[in-house]
Amino acid sequence: MTSTCSPVTLQEIKAAREAISGVVRTTPVERSRSLSDLAGSPVYLKLEHTQVTGSFKLRGATNAVMQLDEKQRAKGVVGVSTGNHGRGLAHAAKEAGVRCIICMSKLVPEVKVEAIRAYGAEVCIVGMSQDEAQEEVDRLVAEEGMTMIPPFDHRHVIAGQGTLGLELAEQLEDLEAVLVPLSGGGLIAGVAAAVKAVRPHIRVIGITMERGAAMHECLKAGKPVHVQELATLADSLGGGIGLNNRLTFQMTRDLVDETLLVSENEIAAAIRHVYWQERQVVEGSGSVGVAALLAGKINVMGPVAAILSGENIDMNQHHRIISGEDVDVTKEGG
Image 1: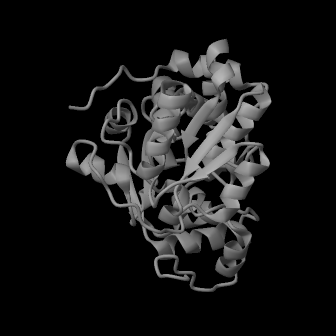
Image 2 (image 1 turned 90 degrees about the vertical axis):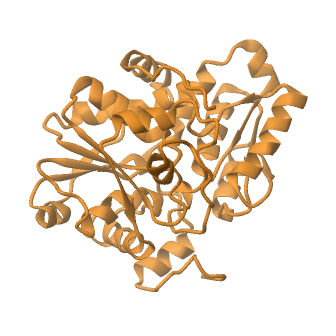
């Protein structure tokens, strides 16, 4: 039976904002003329892809590292990642002078692997799924005494991601809905906890890809279940939520108003739109909110914000997509 913990609170999120303020930047919000015209209501883009490491993951990783005691710092930290958490944790550990090992599956794009190494972290490639990479993390914790900082199901990580929600609520006082990329649930749990605490009426909508939509399927099942990880343009949204999930499943279930799926073609269209219309380079996982808007899947009743959560895309792949090529990563060699 899955054990659960009390939900992360607004107080924890506010404490996280204080803790990470010297490392993590406040990212801007811009109104999208093209999407506003399309939706018939104001649409804003939260430019979180301009974060220091190119992703929101720096927030949670930094907050978690800040909470380590001296014994834990001496042993180092380890985590599993599809890319962006690893980059954020590597940066946070380097800033703190702490050893860091990131375990990743073979599905993670090489550009993300190299980016993590560039921050000074050690990288361990294991298996074909995030769950297999997690087994190596567990070994390092048991045998070397390292502290595991997971990508989402962790109080300090969720509280750190929640700081993004606080920023949004302060930047857009009339916000009616926020579109949040949905994977393991760390971002959406934190954002929902923050915005619902200060403005309960704000709708929180999770957007994820059709291929390997782990949290979406778990919510449908009413409990954490195994979902096969598949190749997708939104690769940072890949991976399961863990059968022993303690926080993000219940928080997503209780706080999120709706979850939606977008196709590979819709994700590609969003990457193109964000580049040509908004002049922004955003990875597939960061474009899913825009994908849902372009596909007419969001019933906008007032000002809505889409979180552009990351920019760490293989630029060769990005060039092919924005040039109009049909990039199909679901087929070998695609």
